[in-house]
Image (cartoon, rainbow, N blue to C red; front, side):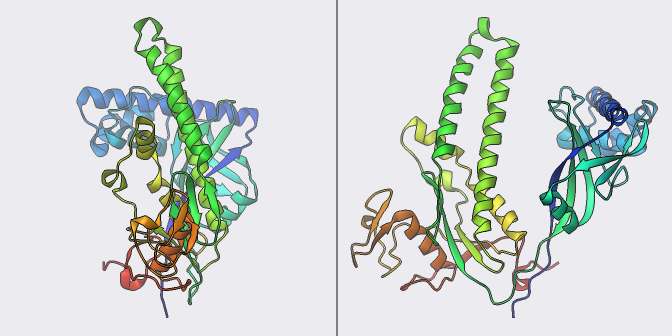
Length: 388
């Protein structure tokens, strides 16, 4: 009988706050004071050349307390400056404030926060997803208060959630072939196109080229053009993250607890492969294989699903029916035709089926033995876990 170790994930849950006008004013004052404290700590750290957290604490803690910050908020302001040595920051905007478990707690569907005006209980606007995740959470690790562009207040809660144990006996092994034209192809026959992602990335590349040409000309290097450059980068990043989150969710929704999605171990892919043409090289180096794999692993773990990675060599050239492997089997990007037995099918489906067989699927025909290279760190067998 397989015995799995218990793992706990840390997830961030964003909830909308519904403060009264008085509470909103207190939140505004708290965020403003917190930013002032961060800027003071940053100024002292740069003057003294000291970004180590505990030594910086001795230098500025009393000043931050005198500014009106509570003890814990002062500690969080120092930690924010010391994070990544803080030297990259030039100025902290009053847009967020960090809380720890002592300054933030949950009271039903409300959150209790420490502000400059004292402790306040602020109701939250929750949906079924938020309620379900809060119910599953084992503990609250803190959170970050942020203010949106339209004046709305949000609290980003850091939750510790235990992942369910995969049921014994196992289930299906589903191969997942990752690509560019088709973001993901499953051995079950499902395919997810990557056309929208590719088109958007090319659109933003062209748009950034136009803005870059304006920045290169001193007469047009205005503050508005610089802000446009930053907005374009943020928009592309948000679009890519949304697309990958949606794809990973759709894949996991098609699985049952105990199933095993198998993917290719594509680490080092960019250094091993090359593409011709500026556009293809641009897309190849931007393709988010690692990001998609991370999202797939953590979403699968929440459902009691174990992700494995297999050797990616020749998955698109091997025949899932007879096992014959040859480069000539891949007639085109979309067509696979075995030169030995004549088996013909979609090339992405063939690759996904071979991945599933390598991971232990009882699919059709013979399959070449291949060892599993990596198991999701969120679900390991006790025999696979490192000894403490």
